Image (cartoon, rainbow, N blue to C red; front, side, top):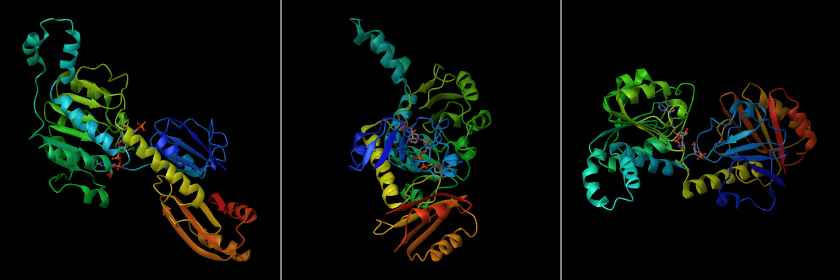
Length: 386
Ligand SMILES: NC(=O)C1=CN([C@@H]2O[C@H](COP(=O)(O)OP(=O)(O)OC[C@H]3O[C@@H](n4cnc5c(N)ncnc54)[C@H](O)[C@@H]3O)[C@@H](O)[C@H]2O)C=CC1
Ligand SMILES: O=C(O)C(=O)COP(=O)(O)O
């Protein structure tokens, strides 16, 4: 029996895929797996039973990745599963920033009792007029799952699109429309574009990337969209730029006290991934990955350990999460040889400071061997799945 706990509501479309040997737990105590969306896990303690954390979504800045790795807890996310939901809201954001649609709707609500509203609207409407996005330049920073969809969609809306991503993956590059201009630096985007949208993870080198220096390079009246994370934008600098009019509109999916009431900030309550489709996609992918890991030891879409897939298990499988240091495999195989255990198949992969070894054995995978392997220095967690 496996136990899982949901720290946020997770779509039933995913949870329904847990078979009878999985039971939901009302808290994390004793859980083998945790499913989470945006709840912060930084202040939580993890007990020894926790083996997997699945983020039903993309961003993992709410999870202590390194602490999890040190405790032998594999953290997964669901790349691309909510990208279309975000893309559609980015397009909506560009349109909301281009004409004062929100102001116009508010005007109608404020004048709902006006018997002459149809005639008065014709007079009032000039206050809410704006521009079209067709023919404007859009800069997309970060060409991952979301950035590529936004860039491609914007070309179909007649925009001239510039893309910047120094680490773009081969898969993303294949998906990107050939009509996108390849910007070699972020400055090129800042200088050229009328609309700038950021789709990068919150990392040390991306935090505060939109600040007074980058804004000073931008065109007067630029529109900035941030559906990635609040910390990517220096809020004090953004407020100054909105007040001065340097930035015409700032569209963000992340309400903070600093930005919530500021004029010309269009602040959305983190709705990018809140669609039926995205929630289902993320939950299905997260549950599938957790099950495959718990039942077969396979790691697919982890953010703190290497991906490693030996398919469906048909004999005892020993899995070892360990540090990426010399002579680990030598020690594992020597120990198995000493116990006269025959290795049928084996894989080892590494990612940064961490590594994973999976060993299918013909005989003898038991708790005693697991204990001996666990005692090897730099081993984080051993499981024998049989
Ligand atoms: N508003 C919402 O509801 C959602 C927000 N997000 C946020 O959006 C971010 C991006 O999501 P995805 O596109 O799915 O992730 P992704 O991992 O597919 O793409 C991120 C891209 O950013 C690029 N990148 C990293 N550092 C960069 C830098 N310094 N300059 C330029 N590019 C850089 C990477 O190479 C990668 O291609 C997530 O990390 C998350 O924070 C994601 C999903 C929903
Ligand atoms: O996937 C992400 O990174 C998101 O920001 C979506 O967050 P959510 O699952 O809607 O709480």
